[in-house]
Image (cartoon, rainbow, N blue to C red; front, side, top):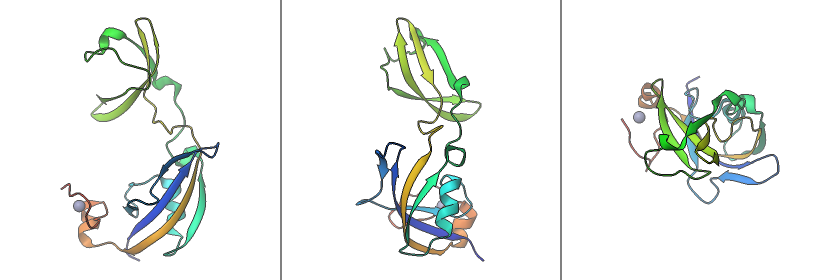
Length: 157
Ligand code: ZN
């Protein structure tokens, strides 16, 4: 069977039921099966659904953004921030081992800044509502590129 491109709407809630993210009323997401475009636990569930079908999907953190890693929390000096004083909640992109990572400022205490390199959803069990908008066979271009091509989507080749 050929790989599928699946387009779906979603709503994401945290454990308290608070909505973290949603595509309702906006543009649905598309992904190419087997290309790591979305978290594995969600992909497994979506692949089993038919067009128009909706489902609540709970994805444990192991199958979402992984465990929270305390080792990614570090203290740095305030003067390490060349662009001026950071605020709690500021997010910076850094390059480490050739990878882009996001770090979040979680505490500032005098000259000490505590930063957290975990994904904001790390360690969190995620509760999705999903609905399949469309599913079709992937084109050979999409399989070559390893991502879905969506009408009106941006091109990035
Ligand atoms: Zn492409």
